[in-house]
Amino acid sequence: MIASTDPGAMTRAQTPDAPATDCREGVLELPQTFSLFFGGQLSGVRVAWRLVGESGPVVAALGGISAGRIVATTATEKGWWADIVGPGAPLDTQTCRVLGIDFLGGSGQTTGPQRGQTDFPSVSAFDQAEVLRLLLKHLRIDKLRMIAGASYGGMVALAFAQKFAPLVEHIVVISAADRAHPLSTAWRSVQRAVVRYALQHNDGPEGLRLARALAMATYRSADEFAARFGGEAVRHNGQFQFPVENYLLSRGDAYAASYIPEAFVCLSESIDLHRVDAAQIAVPTTLVAVREDQLVPLADMQSLQARLPHARLIEISSRYGHDAFLKEVQTLRAVFAESLRPGSEP
Image (cartoon, rainbow, N blue to C red; front, side, top):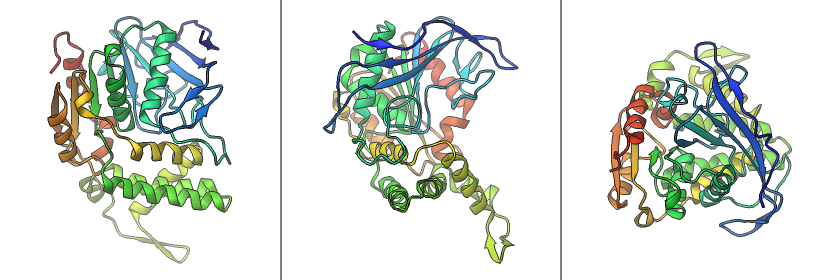
């Protein structure tokens, strides 16, 4: 038996410019010990989830390590995929239901490291896939029509397709490959080192602020930075400050105010530990690669497509680089419309 604290009641979520949408959410409590892919176990695992939409097939929407169960915008909360999920949006909650989860090991309501905790075990994308499988069983969802996974969520989609192929009809993987590129791991390794150093000196939030600022420099393209931040430096308190510096550090401030440093380290590491066997993924797959993506090179996506048994690759250009999945609304509208259409599998 799987216990749950979710009330089971449906509420109505509404934005100022969109009709109301059914919203159901809860926290699934796993009574059994949860065994992890890289070893170790967790007891008392809790999984926070939200399901929005009135009727129709279920799509799981999974994003980067900062994303969570709040996918669509409501009257009180902005969804992390606000431009993509909602009434009339590319993932239209009037024709399908969209499931979001807080990741294991993250800063949401799903089980993760607490502030000051140094012994939280390593987490795999396969662990996230198992969490999703247990949640589907609890919600009595026999099969997902699609997993729409971007960045880390794309890694989880690939892991889920490898392990639980009968439970999903199609996966859309945006800016994620079968393993992390070594250069991307290099950037993230430095970010984690900064956070760990700060934690050792009792200033985890400052370490997270700097790590996030560095991460932001890898998310977007050179063209966008040139267009937005080409202005002159300004002297402030005796030091020069550059426009791009102010932007990056302000993004770091916002992130550090809402995210747990230890959770950032956990899920950042999970990205770099990611490995799936493309030959074992038989689920029809649509890959979306961004030519300007610094973190997931186009060549890695092309290589993955060549090794997947049933896959197509869509290449796009975007000044937003790795963050294109948050911004390229019309491109994703076409991708999701095609992927949700019956008989559209590659």
